Image (cartoon, rainbow, N blue to C red):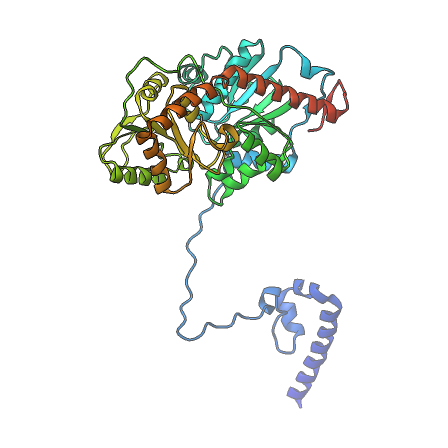
Length: 464
């Protein structure tokens, strides 16, 4: 009876405790554990949330569960690449443009800021940009160059060294060269160039307008990748594009809905012209810049191997790359040449080969200016400049077709002479002065578009 009375009393306490737990709800977990045990019939405390969670099912017998590796805590690191620059533009939008001044597109002198990616000797795109900017400077415009180098390729070089190299490698620019944008001073037109510079240019303030000189369709430089996506994105920010061929202009308009003009690449007639040299009848020269995939060098080498099989006595010369390439035929290697050396090579060879899978290279024009017939790829961009027939020999992207085009220029003297004369005549009007006229018109077009969009406001700042 005494034990029964004790259990009865405990039951009263327990059921009273349940009413307490019920009233407290989840707060019952906050009661001291000894008190929870006193109120519990089973003599145990209230389970915590973690304790109430169902236990994980045991792994099947014999199944090993791998342990995770020890993790390493990484502190936040400051980004230093163009991906973060793009992310800021996507997140915050472009920096506001200054309101346009009435008639600013017709002003005689403009402040022009050219934003360029890192460069090296022999860069064709940079040569185009600096040839144009130097001539704009000679027309009275105030010009400056700004290096966007987020990956640090030229981190060791001082701005004065960069300016010296620009003058030595490309053109005698008189204006200043800046590294980064800490000293940004604004401009009438900020000019983006390579795709790596576009998002940086969109972030620059104190500008009346922005423009984009497009030398090539750069997304095609990459396989499916972040770089390809970022390069495509650069054409979608309402920058007025000034494209280096009608083919490229039309592509930007049709594929991206961009505003775009075109200009024709110029040739330096003082350097590239016929020279009083005896021209060989057995020499093919090939621009074999293997580091640039769009030059289709493996296809070119296969074509030359086929030509050598057909005509083993033909002399083949490769240039445009520092290191000799592996090839299935004997050849002479000249490496990277100066402009004067190129002019001499073009003046004594029989035919040139230069392949372009995207926008055409300036090199065929320079060859033609020296009286050297040239073979290029058909069906890409060359027809928009040279026409379907008459100036360049065009061949499909097939080694036998390319070899046949070269063979015709060697064996058919009449055809060679016709191509040589036509090339000299065609290129005569393709000067850098004419190219600068077209680019200057494109920059003024960017300003007039800006003025039209803003409705002629003249003070303060306006959104991009």
